[in-house]
Image (cartoon, rainbow, N blue to C red; front, side, top):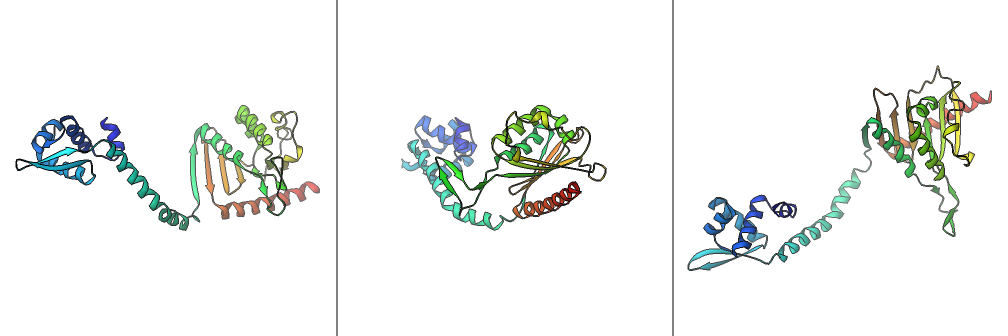
Length: 271
C-alpha cells in the first residue's frame, strides 16, 4: 500500500504516518511516531505537511496537540486538484512548446529491431489531399495524391539483408497505396532484385526505380525521405543503426535534392 500512496504524491514518511493515523485513529505526536516507526521531530513536520494536504485534522486533548485522519476519500480530492492544476497549466506549457516547434527532433536506433522500426514509420504516411478537389464518396476520399517515399537505396543489399521483413514491408506499403521512388546502384543482381518481394497483384504505378552507376553511386546506406522525416539506415551488419530526423524544412530540402538527382538519372536513362 505504501508504494501506491507514493504514486499519489506522498513521500515515504507521509505514507507511513498517514497509515499509522488511520490504524490508531490518530492521537498525539508521540503515539503516531511510535506506530509509524519514525523519529518524533520528523514525524511532527510530516504531520504538518499532511495537515496542509487536508489529509489530517488537528485538535487538543487535555492541552496536548493531537492529529486525526480525514476520510480516505480525501486522497481522491487531492488527486483531482492536481489534475485540475495540470489542465490549467496545459495552455501555458503548450505555448512554450510551440515556440520551440521549429527545432528538429532527432532519434537514433540500434540493432535490427531499430532498423525495422525506422522502416515501419514510413508506413504511417497518409495520402496528400487537395482540399479544393477533395470529395468523399462512400467513405473513399477522391482527389488525393498517394503518399510518397523517396529513397536512395541498394536493392541488392536491402533484399538480401532481411528478406522476410522486406517482403512484409513491401506488401504492406503497396497495400496502403504508398508510392515509392528508388534510386539504386545497377548490378546484374539488382535489376530484378525486388521482383520476388512484390505481391502477385499490385498497382505498378506505385513503384518507380532508376538504376545508376554503381561505381559513382555505391549507396552503402539507405536514405528514406517521407512526410516531414528524413531517415538514414545502415545495413552493414557491423553497424546496424537507424537515424530519424523530423524537420519539415530539412525534409523539403532533401526532397528537392532527390528530385534533382532523379531528374539527372532520368536524363541519363533517356540517353
